[in-house]
Image (tube, rainbow, N blue to C red):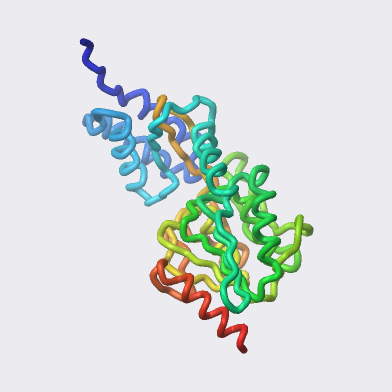
Length: 301
């Protein structure tokens, strides 16, 4: 009987440090983190029994300097492909197929108020355009709309712009993304045309949030809130405003490194670390009833 060999952390740490130095949107923090990882490696802090434990230890250190929740060493139970971004894409595809393409619920409540739940992600637009268009077109005739993001953990900024396009009347500057690569800025705008029918920019709109709502889902809530288009109801969100990319560094481990940061054209900042603060704070479990009551009162006026 052979005894299982212990996981060798050094190659994983060296590659993680290299990727940070090369790609992290904050180069000076990347330097601090790379030093920290190498110091902790020398102290044998990463002598873990398995990849899952190593991921937990390294993620805690990666997030210890500036609390960036997109900065992670992620464990995958199934072996992940070596190609950049492949690990994330594979997991996403499974979720897409089991969630009606990211729009698992469209419901009509009393008083002509519709609910569209977007979960568990805002999937890549080339996958999600069709199901999202169908869901939002179906809800377009409602008197008021509630967009439920309580279980949405993020996704594609292009999909954020696509969803916003159904909820506004005219082309609108939503967000600006600063990318470390080439030190360039890229503006995100709602689309001049959408497939199907728009809900539009004047009827009552509510967005439900929770402490699970993360990343691109936070951008959707934040963009609509800053434009004065939606009332956010629920809990403060998780606070991740940095789009990231993933690299496989071990058959079961993926490093995710933020490569950009969001700058909102209205606030001049973003929701990193603070989360999106709800306009109507309440427990996430109560937020649907609360938003429905608010919509009915507004429609009665």
